[in-house]
Length: 207
Image 1: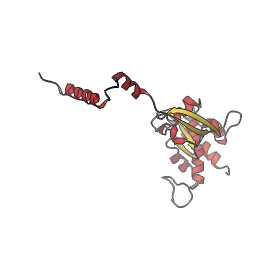
Image 2: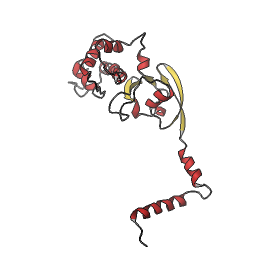
Image 3: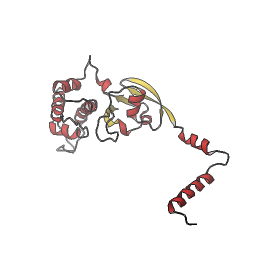
Image 4: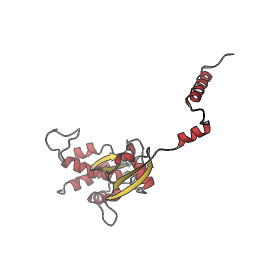
């Protein structure tokens, strides 16, 4: 009797698994063990308050904020770190929260759009976005604003970008710097020019 390559590989895999498993563990019990997620406790300082989480170790910071802490201002866009909608500020630096695990941020200071300002007390960048109509549908806006706040801090801290004229001299608070640094935040509505105007206005105010 001939046997196909596909069937041969399947039989080989089944046989190897059977020999690898302890004889006293049934297939059903073994499968149930594999399905149990690894949980871990982590405490993150979110918007100035310590928040304790008990999460699957595979939970991203984005899902931890949205699903566990109900901070839904941070948006899930591409979930691949390409659109910037999930941008939050961690220990003073902006990151894509969909690309990092919650358990990696024990003790970190995380600021989301809710922590920057609320309707009754807006952050200057939020107010500038409203003034300059820096959004249309608004879905990317939380990530845009968090990124914009961090961009100004980056420049004031002297961190150069690809378009900076010098690696040793302080970069300038100018449109070309803002455009380069904000390039990871995608706006499908195309409000880019208004966003740059909003950032420019805030940047002109002395720190």
